[in-house]
Image (cartoon, rainbow, N blue to C red):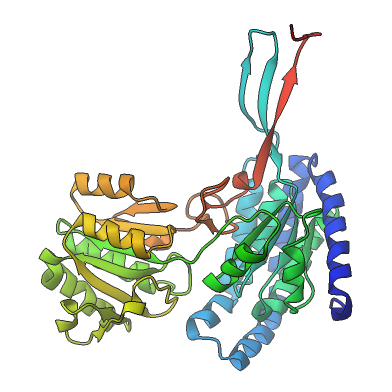
Length: 421
């Protein structure tokens, strides 16, 4: 446990250690990084009982804090979820190492040969809330991309994250890589977060992963560059040309599969022409599944719904609640999404190819979907093995941030005694 009386000094020490580790990782072989991740995966599975025991302490802490059922679900680890963590570590291990990839190369009339080559960012700081699996995902992805990382998990997942972090360190040790390459801030004190946000000498980029409050705090106070990962205010537009069976299947999955993830649907926009046909059917199905549906005046005529208020538009529930309203068509739906969305993930359900084309072309969310559940808004489902989060900003990385997105590049210029005239 970090000495809470000298958090600034301890964080400076962690930053310096991370910088030294990053210098070594920058040219570590792909084979060593692969070995570290495979060893970490084996350690997680071997120590799963210990991890579940640690997680039980976090669940007790969460209950004492009065966390919602959705937040408790995000926090909980069982053997199935630990298997998912192991699979994620192995998937990242098997990916092509991005470091050293020649992105482009060309010859100049001057006689120079120029290559643009992928390089690590350096030191990444990841600040996240209750989901303990982020510890493994973020640690693995940063390592794969040749970065050192300082992880600051949520207070709720303190014990789980510590147990998972120990497995990552075991992997580094087994592979002969510096153990300081993946560090976990060993305190719940929020002063450590404030320190991380100003460590411009040792941290190259901050990745906040959590709710609007956390991301807003980081964006306001950080002096280190930030990859913004805003909340997932996810919309599904049900067009008048939608297939009823597709609507039912996709919407139920998008809302109820896991309500506590950022890809969960939070608002339905239903074409007024099908409000009392397809719309009524899917709303009734949601209610039957235990979802509270907060509706505009038109849809409130459906039995079992709740009247929406102005606060229900642009809200991330992360719970068995969804907002629903009618719109006059695609343009009205897109106007609503532009006003209330978070540029995270939005979906259109339609069999009209032109409507789908316009939705995918004219909206500017990081992820846009057609006839598919928004629960697929996930780096693993995109073939990235895992993700450090879904970036909603427009600088450097956008959408699922995997190992490749955690790199920069440099130019290698070769001549033959070439001089400039």
